[in-house]
Length: 227
Image 1 (cartoon, one colour):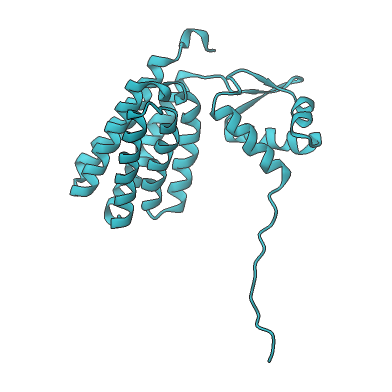
Image 2 (tube, rainbow, N blue to C red; image 1 turned 90 degrees about the horizontal axis):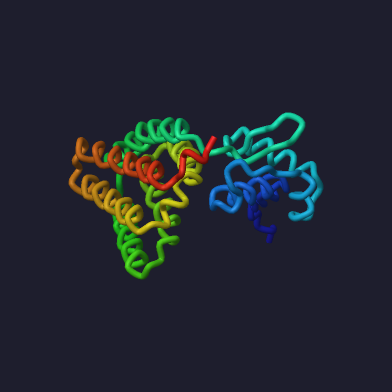
């Protein structure tokens, strides 16, 4: 009897530069690397226990991603916080996430709706238990489910990228009770509109939710100390 062909496909290993890029990105987004902080290739290479080449490549990719900026003859630093960037990102997010929600409304499955509802229930339990930091992950999951439900991979990628940019501004405010409760209320309104198929109400709910995020950033960052 001839051997059966299994058609196994072995995924390619993740390049070192991508692992380094992911690690540094996480350090920026969770606030461990501060805005304006300089990054030295040799120090990072020593800490990560790799050569300087993948570190240099990772830093260049993060610059293209908008999280770092290059300083001539010095190297890289974490991009400083700028209010004009917050306004720009929020304006684009409103357009993208409103479109994603509208497309999701037309094709949302019962399973996806239940996932959104469960996200809200779990968020509320964690907030009541005082686990505010857990909401960072829940918030990301909520927007991920909604964007994915749009059925558009391109729109999903745009929403993910813009949310990453916004997270480094929001990280401090998301640890505050009033911000978390306001964001959760926004999620509830979005789900209610999806459930009732209220397109105009959905557009308003998404806009108000993202505007609330922008104003919470404005209130909890000392902009006089930024560049």
